[in-house]
Length: 267
Image (cartoon, rainbow, N blue to C red; front, side, top):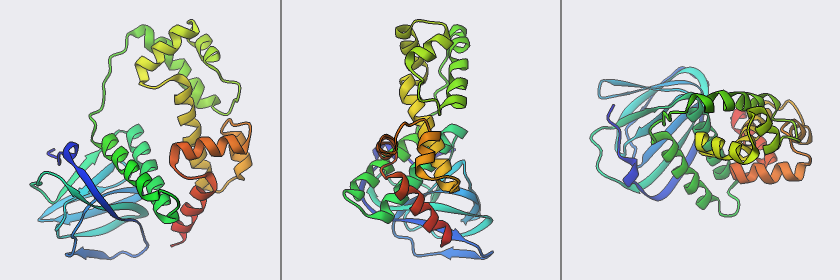
């Protein structure tokens, strides 16, 4: 499918980041768009209609909407989406809509970036606009980058698959180290780190941190435990260290993330 060339996009201004959460069954008409937009469902499904074509937005599809586009949309499944409206210099597009279908891992990451941007926009704390712009570019980069089908020798796969499975099951264990993971892979620590980084484009400990933060995000929005309990369940020895790592990854603190998500759900 043809899609806009986002590589030449120069962001001028983020106009708004809106969380749309509707319960009715109405079809909405939009004839007054003057900005570009990217949008993604956090939950549910919405169908857009433009010039006789249908575009589906769900948890695995990010939509680009051109400025001046005239369209209708209908929420098929109850849920919510985040829409980033922006002004930019970019090549003229030949279409009003374009969809970017993402793999499951990429979709989860892009969804988390949309939520982080919405949180920052709602809080409007120090440097929020700069941080939102940074997240916007990360969204575009992740959503438009071609999936890398990297060939891994069978020896790599046999060594690393047990390690990745171990991380996803035991991420709450605070004693996980490169040495621990290298032992599971059956290699020296130095060789293991090189092999893992080559395969996943990130160090083993950075990968572990990403898994921990994503699990923490799920627990925070479920309101199933206190932040101190979530810190422990995510493998952090203190709330301070957990909050520091969480903010470095998402741009907001755990309490801010949970509060912003709760406020949007109540809307």
